[in-house]
Structure formats: structure tokens, C-alpha cells
Length: 595
Image 1 (tube, rainbow, N blue to C red):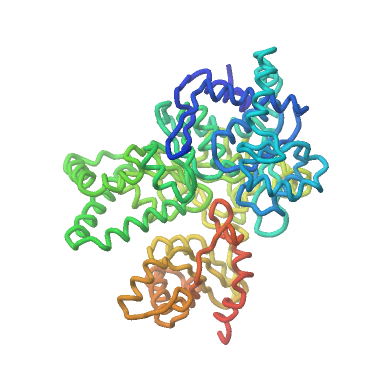
Image 2: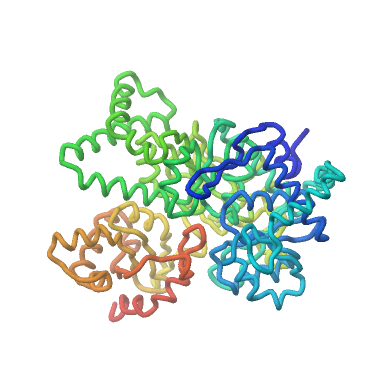
């Protein structure tokens, strides 16, 4: 039977694979499994429990939780009833949680724990439509998930196929989810995605990655509230029958990789940047002979990766060198990923070409893709057998891509959202009469059909001299240097480009100590010799840029940019306007007295 809805996809997974470990999670220091049968039972019991509360087709149910098996139970339960779920980032403050619950008209909300329940309790008095709070962990004043499932079991005892019957009434055009985008200004918009949107995207992604096998494990750590992880780490893995292991937290991802030994995982570039930095920091402390060995292995690996990209055989001599390089050097890097990794998928933000080529040289393939919440999300992706670093790959099946006259990327197909919830005018602005969604990104398609992103249309810096600067490629180039943790270019309506830089404080401290420069972090970033060091690095790494693109001044920030401070989105993209407003005085100082 053709897969039309996410419930079709779910039942195809649990009925077709019958695995002892369909999901994995860590509890009490040990990894535990949820079998296919247990997963089916949990979803069906949760669904009928919701039905016992009066929830039905067309109702909206929010999920305010970290990644965990119960997130999947709640998601598939709501969908089986014909409802639409509303995922909410657990990192969001109470005010934003309230806005989403109110705007989405959620009738019920799942919360993971007391912390998330407290956010709902604080605003519940003003939400007349919110009737039920269901908690995964024991929370006073909320319905426990165990009690909800108990209700569901009673109903299923009377009618064992009740959930399948309800799921069969759901159509591909029915609303499946409302995902609120994390805007940098104004209220977030609710993106309406149907079953057709999400199913078509998962099935097309499966065709792009036929290597996926049921005996693979996927480590899931990006928020399931984000459509990238929802498709790549949830729907796609269910369809492929891969085991989904939920990471304990972002901070524990490195340890969890070693413990679960995944073959595949999705991430935003920040993880790869940190891994790249750690490898180079370790190598810098090694004896000179080891550093020489690393450089040799990297040159050999680069030649091997170039052969892979060009789709040609490495030849016997290069193959022998690659085997030696892998045994002596790259195997140690692979061990940090668990030793079985076949594939990283990157999305959510641009990946530096240097980092993609570094991992490719170490025989750790990163396939970068591109998409947005409004496109379910995948528009294009690199494939394991057809990869081009510096690009975001080829369009997936049934997806059209074209470039507008001003360079904006447009896309059309079954992946394009139904619209923005209760915002018809914003929907008309985003989707033109021909059905093309306007992405807001700038790019071009090369001679072989690979899409190359140059920047966000709204992020372009226009200097007072009328010159346009695309900041992301320059920022990514600088972040490939391990001295840089984050870079935010500025210069809109100014007479030259400058940058705010978050240093790698550990590396900066070591360098300062060698130079006899003392002081706290706050003191170091203000010292002229430290600022001069960073400006020199910037100049060396951007010497080939046009004169108007070059960064003339830098200011160092004394602390990391964080989600908690509202400076990063949940997928670690910089909220430029927030950062520029927060550091306005510092920016003004950079340009004070400039001619």
C-alpha cells in the first residue's frame, strides 16, 4: 500500500521491521530499548487516551519537550487521531510558550517535566482553549502519561483496531503540524505542514540515501521541534527502520556517539566546527613528528576525497596510502564518532567548504543539504555517491528549483507548506501565484545542477558606498580557523565592513600566556595586542577578497553567544539583529571617527 500519511509511515515501520530496539534512550546511566511492539502499543494507548479526553480530528496538541521516546509517542498519537501537533522548543521562555499555545489554539499540551510544566502553569489562566496538560514525568496538577495510557488501554481492550480505524480516515491533505519559526524580529509565524508535505519529503530523502539500512543506528540530538530533525532523524529513520537513539543533551553528544556507535546522524555545522577545532587543538599539542604524520595523512586523504568527488578510482598506490593514513591517523578520529559512522547529514546553516573537505579527507562523509521549515524541509542535498563540497547538492525527487532575476532561490513541489497559520497575507507574500515559494536565500545553480547558496537576501550588507557584501561565506571562512568561535560581520550603511568576533577562549588564553599577556577574559579581549592578533588573522585569511569586502576592524566579545540570551536560534544560527542591538555601543566605537 502506498504511503499517504505519517500514520501509514509509522505502521509500515513498526509492522514491517519488528525490531527489539526501535528506539533507544538513556536512563539511570544505562541505555534502554523500546521495541517495535512497545512503540506501537505506546502510540496507540496514548492516542486512545487523548480520545478519552475528547480530542479528535482537527484538534491541535502542543509538545513542549526535549528529545525522548515520549516525544515520538505523542507525535504519532496525535497524528493517528487526525490532529495536528505543535512542537515547542523547551529552551523557549514562558512568554514565547504562551504566544505559541495561544496562537495555535492548542487544546492540550504534552510537557516533559516540572520545568516545562511550570511555564504552562504560569500562563494557563489566560488560555481558555487549553483544556489538558499531560506530563511525561510526574508533575502535580497534570495528567500523567502513564494514566493517559491506562485510559487508552481500557479503550483498546474493547476495540483493538480503534487507532488504525481512526488513522485510516486521515488524508494526505490533512494538516499534520504547525511549526513556529524562530524569527529575529516580531512574533514567530506558524508554518502549516500537511501529511503530504512531510511524507513526500521523507520518501524523497529515502531515495537520495538508499544506503540506509534497518540495522543502522541514528543518534538524534537536534531538537525534534525543528523540521530538519523531524524529517531526517525521525520520519526518515522510521521509514528506513533504523534504530533512533536519543542523545541525553547537546553537551553529552560526544559521549553518546561513543556509546551508541551510530552509522548516521544529522547536525548543524556548529558540531562539525567544534569537532574540527578539537582535532586541530590536539594535533597542535602533539610532538612534531606526529604533526608531520597528520599533515601527510591529510594530504593523502584529500587526494582520496578528490577522487571520490570526481567519481574516479584512487588507483592502487593511493589506495595503499589511504589504508596506511586511516590506520595511523584517521581511525583515531573515527573512534570519537563511535567507530561505525557512515554518514553525517548537515543542514540548518551553511557548512564551511574547508570543514566539509577536512572530514571528507578523513573518510568521514558530510552530505550537506538545504531547506527551510516552509519546505518540510529538504529542497536539495548532496548524496553519498554524488557529493560536491561548497554546494548544497541536487534537488530531491519532485522538487523544482529556479533562480529569480535578483538571485533569490525559488522552489515548487509537494514539499511547499500549506501556508502560515492565520496569516493569509504573509502566505501570499511567500508563495507566488505560480506556486513557487520564495526562500529569501540567494544562490545559483552550477553547470551540473548543484545548488550553491551565497547568502540570505536579508543578511546582505550594503555599505554606504552602495557595495553589496554577502557575509556568510566570509564568516564561514574565518570560523574554519580554530582561534575563532563565532564571527558576525557588520557594516550595513557604513563605509566599511567590520566584525564582532567570539574568540576560542581556551586557545586565546594559551596564546596570551606564551606572549606574556595577562588578564581575565574580559580584560584580554580589550588588549590592543590581542585585537591586533585577530585582525592580522582576518587579513591573512581574506587577502583575496575585493577591497570593499575586506574587514577593516574587529571587536572581540567577552562571552559566547547563546540561545538563552536570545542571540542564537535553537539550531545555532546567529540572530544578527539581536546581536547588533546588544552590542550597538561597541559597534559604534568601531566606526567612531572613521572617514
